[in-house]
Image (cartoon, rainbow, N blue to C red):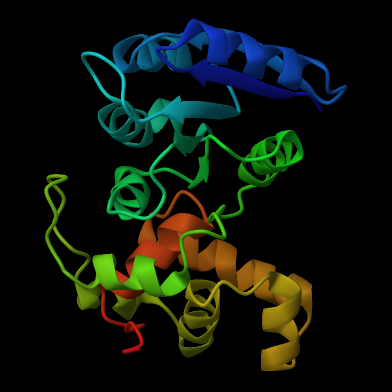
Length: 226
């Protein structure tokens, strides 16, 4: 299956470079280009891409606002957003996740990293740049209300989960893959995948990245004190 990609960046040169890179892959194609967030939202509705590569700093509607509009649109539930940023070690990391992004990547990443990011996001997995450690993400999420207009997740939302689903959620928040979780809990990877999917459905999470946000904001997982 071909992965459909939408490029959103206000720099035409960067969009051109990304297009050449993406279109060079046999399993990917660029289905549109946007120079600002508002155009990205419109094209997402029109073209229905699998993945949107979204710059943060754009004129008018920025990438974070556009990501939130896409993630809150039920008709775009299958669209995944990967935030591209020059600034990885700041609150853009968590604001991206809270806005509904599946992850983020630095603009200085290698071409293979970018292509891998697209495939990971299209597959529904969380994409967290190595530069942004789990500790950094946890610290910001633990601060509660941000300036993104969203209230923190209440612990009561977790009442819908079974004990095993909570265990799996903790492991997901720790950044572990299904295979790693299966080994830790002595179950099969397929069983883990089932628990993850059920947790996502019950909590209204779009993907694993959103499960990480919920785990921290609800207090199920707390940041380590260094």
